[in-house]
Image (cartoon, rainbow, N blue to C red; front, side):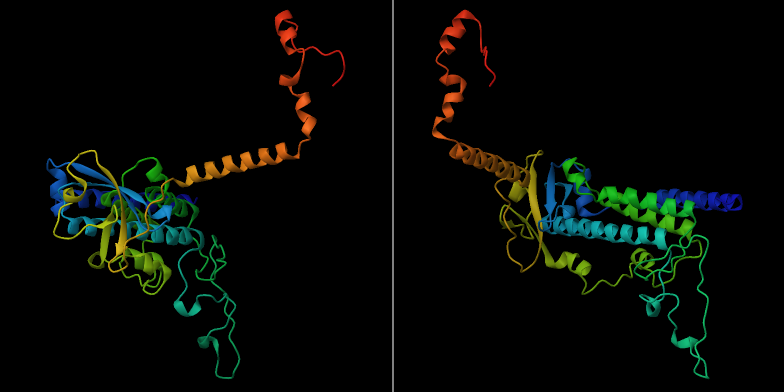
Amino acid sequence: GDKSLRTPVRRLVFRFRLCCWRAHLKAPPITSPVATARNSRFSMVLCHVKRGDDEAKQFLYEIPAATPCADMTRELVDVHNLRLKVGRLTAAADELARHGPMKPPEKQGLDDMTPMLEDLQEDGSVRRREPERGPTYCADPTERRTGNAPPPEMAEIITRTSEDAKRLIAKEQVQMKQLTSRKALADAVDAIKGAVMIAYPMGLPPYDTVRQILDEKEEIGGSAQGMEVLDPDHSSVWFASKELAHGKVLSDFVGKNEKTKIVCKLQKKGAGAPQREPVISKEEQQAMIAHYHQKQNEAKIIEANNDDDYANSAWANPKALKNSFTGIGDVSWRPR
């Protein structure tokens, strides 16, 4: 990269790290009811939280058994929504690193050569303007972004930070038995915010998706992404075909065993009980299907054989007993 950019970039990185360190020192202690119960000597319950059948929306979360069900519902819904936010933010950050900031809303979906209303002159002619394309121009196939990507070293910072955040919400986290924490997800959002500040010190336009997500001004109502977001006041948690009623404690449903693991599902209130868990897993079902398919093919082969086909088998050899005593074995002087 350009050597003249190295010193300002290093200064911005140092200032960002210093601000994060100061914010960590000044952060107030967590005093939520769930955090208070977690810090005390209560037993912990491992919750395998699911939302529908999508494996990407599953996560493991540890919560005290003495937690009120209302606080548990709110905390699980907050973590679920925060995971969705990280997913939307990483997708937008990747597009930002590849194709630069977004175009104004009236220009999204139009190429750079499409004339706008302000290009129309008084005599009826259209003024042609040369598109602003930087040295790192990369055209956006959707025409939603300008294509003026940040410098390669800045784009690498954004991409690397986004990849780290994606690992926190990957479906492999459940398979590796990695717990999800609200603090780790919040730190991932702050890290992406810092990477964007390093790449764009002057800030992004207010209509850019990345800035809207970071500023909590994202409008996703009515979209498919908005339907996935849950309202803590209108959501419930189901376990063993029972809704965890507010006013009770989690230990009233799962007991006080410190090694308890439950599979619970998030559901909207009034939507009824979620679908029950299958008796066998998806992998076991696929193995059973493959086994029965193999048996079916073997049965077809046996059925297609002639009735005298058994004569070629080793057990039908009349000299098998004699050969076993003499130790000669299966010796044949004729080509088979």
